[in-house]
Amino acid sequence: MTRTASVAAPVWVVDDDRAVRFVLATALSDAGYDVSGFDSAQAALSALRTREAPRLLFTDVRMPGDDGLVLLEKIKQAYPQLPVVVMSAYTDVASTAGAFRGGAHEFLSKPFDLDEAVALAARVLGEQVERAPPVAEPEPAGDALVGDTPAMRQLFRAIGRLAQAPLTVLITGETGTGKELVARALHRESPRARKPFVALNTAAIPAELLESELFGHEAGAFTGAAKRHTGRFEQADGGTLFLDEIGDMPASLQTRLLRVLAEGEFFRVGGRELIRVDVRVIAATHQDLEALVREGRFRADLLHRLDVVRLRLPPLRERRADVPVLAERFLHEAAEKFSAPPKRFGKAALERLLAHDWPGNVRELENLCWRLAALAPADTVTPTDLDGMLQSGDGARDGWDDALRAWARERLSAGVADLHALARERFDRALLEAALEHTGGRRTEAATRLGLGRNTVTRKLGTSRKRR
Image (tube, rainbow, N blue to C red):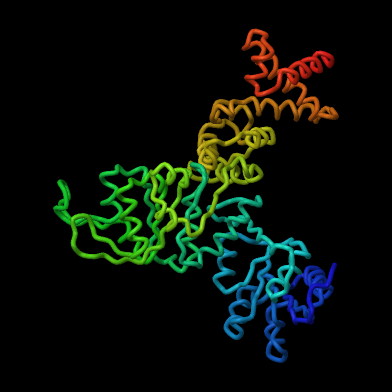
């Protein structure tokens, strides 16, 4: 490992795990730092009374006695400028946000790459290193948001940071990915947590009623307005207002929303009293807002106000490794709700779930599990139980890829070698034969329809026939 520190800056490592303490201290020492190790928060606090404070401190969370978050709190009271890196193998939105809320400089999940830890130390201490800072790896621990894939770990880390900042957030993602769960997590871990969280789906409210829902109205403002109505902005005062499907908001209301975001004030419908509110707005959409701006259907200045920070929630097909954990959780919750015997997924059923593309995302998986909890006859869910329950999705997901996966698993189990070349050959043959059948055997037209040259079609056909 190369030496990166030009001076022996004092760095402390606090961890009750001797092995972790040793390897991290050794890596930091090899990088040129003056490292001291402590096996408890109490030992580190005692040393602070007799020694000069370090320039950087690494601490584990779970330790006997005071845990790492208590140590963080005490250190920040005495040394508010001392950067503290919190380490943990048990991370989720709550603990990550708790660390940042307590003043942690960074969150490092276990197991971590030692080179990344050294690069982090160099970055914190002002050294120039080429490595990027490490990415935290939160794990689920009863939180509504569940996931252990890299995309979800990055999302959890972002939530932990953004929860403390009074910034407007735009959450993007396909329908059913759980955008409201992200908004609720941002609110729950923020200083506004004791104030209201108010959600409104702008696409679910008729355009003529949406203005009143957002801003309220006075008695007599319009036909049927018998008494004053408090709008969602007033309801959320001091807290968070979540506006889902913001791309469907009518143009006239976009102008009013822009003013509230800019000035924090508005009039109720039919009112003359200027209402001032302190509301954090979190918006969400499954649409391409930039495209809507180009089409003149969404205000560019409103997009800039909403898009201070953007969080993308990945579709379930991009984080398939999370499917088994989500499925078992949903199935367990549904069984408890029905007061039914617990069920579990058999191996073959889980493989079927992993092969599915989930066009309805997490919501589709949750609904499936509720149906299975009510309808599956045995305590173990089988592939037969799934028949007819999985959405077919759009035209690009019509089942042929599921058949391909099944074929590949069969060949791999049989020990077939060079499977990729074999699959490509069969794919080319099936595609070419279908195109020739469609064009009545006219190769030039078949090549054009496939986007290939005629010579390529001829060559592939010749190769395919030789190998039959």
